[in-house]
Amino acid sequence: MHWKKAMVTGGAGFIGSHIVGELLKRGTEVVSIDNYLSGSPLNLVEYKDNPLFKEVVCDVRSRGTLKKYIKDVEVIFHEAASKKTICLKDPRMDLDINGKGTFNLLELARDHGVKKFVHASTGSVYGEGYIFPQTEDHPLNPTSYYGVSKLAGEKYVRAFNHLYGLDTTVLRYFHVYGSRQNWTDTGGVVPIFIRKMINKEPVEIFGDGTQQRSFTYVQDVVNANMMVCERKNSTGQAYNCASGINVTIKELVDSISRIMKVEPNIQYKPWAVGDIKVFSIDNMKIRSLGFDFKTSFDNGLRETIRWMIATKGQGRF
Ligand SMILES: NC(=O)c1ccc[n+]([C@@H]2O[C@H](COP(=O)([O-])OP(=O)(O)OC[C@H]3O[C@@H](n4cnc5c(N)ncnc54)[C@H](O)[C@@H]3O)[C@@H](O)[C@H]2O)c1
Image 1 (cartoon, helix red, strand yellow):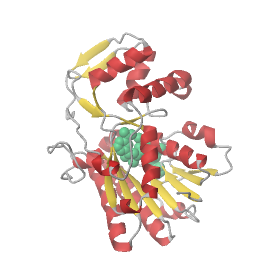
Image 2 (cartoon, protein in one colour):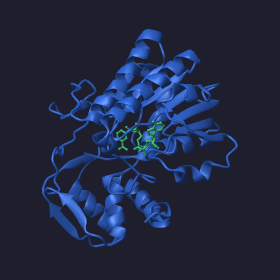
Image 3 (cartoon, protein in one colour):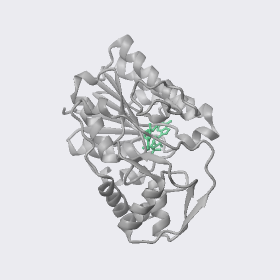
Image 4 (tube, rainbow, N blue to C red):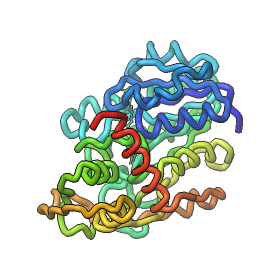
């Protein structure tokens, strides 16, 4: 599918900036919308001289400001969100961004003839899983403010599809990792562990390290976003966007250590409250569209480590 013009919200974030890059590579004009709550202009540096690219500082809570940039947009990739660490501090802001912000974009999409709306959701909409492996039909009982507000966004997406026939697809992401991910202590476990091993700091494992995560490489997530635009039968649907690669936290440390050839100084700490021990995600539905998660865990890790070492987190550690 070739789009003339796309809007990527959260374009300065980890996943959003990779979507921006992919679209530019495909010759699509891209407007990035971000308020830099957790994103960084450094994530967009390599695109800033591209004549097809426009970087806008804009908050998805502001419908009036968003409206200025919607002209001729054919597709929206909605990645902007207030994430877990922020949600705990300010759940009201969270609801505003993840709920109302999504509503604003859907209204604009409906009123301005946007042809496709791809919505970034999360495995957190399920809450604690109890039917394994978890399919998209698993009950949705989020147990965090983040999960509740993201589910509100998802439900608005569904309503706009149902009420107005807006062509929408929801992708529920799980443990995405890769370059440009936040490596500070509030970021993702993969870059945090890599940073600690680069800096020869102790690597803290909460519990005994047997908790599993369903790691998915960022380029596979980008490819899934592009792919659903090509499949008419993805309209109105929600998909688990998870690689199916299940790795324990101890195995993650061992893999990074093997690739970097660094002996980790592991410190075991008490289990974190609410830590989920097992993720077993069914990805058959997205695979049935002919999609494949192509990146092996080793290759994804190698690429992430390469980026971290080469850039030292974009020169920030
Ligand atoms: N990374 C993961 O493992 C993961 C897992 C599940 C779901 N998700 C979802 O994927 C999407 C992208 O997440 P990410 O990991 O790239 O996080 P990120 O924090 O790097 O990106 C989110 C971006 O949204 C921007 N933003 C926040 N509030 C905004 C607002 N009011 N207006 C405009 N921009 C705003 C931030 O500044 C940031 O650039 C989010 O919707 C998130 O819920 C991510």
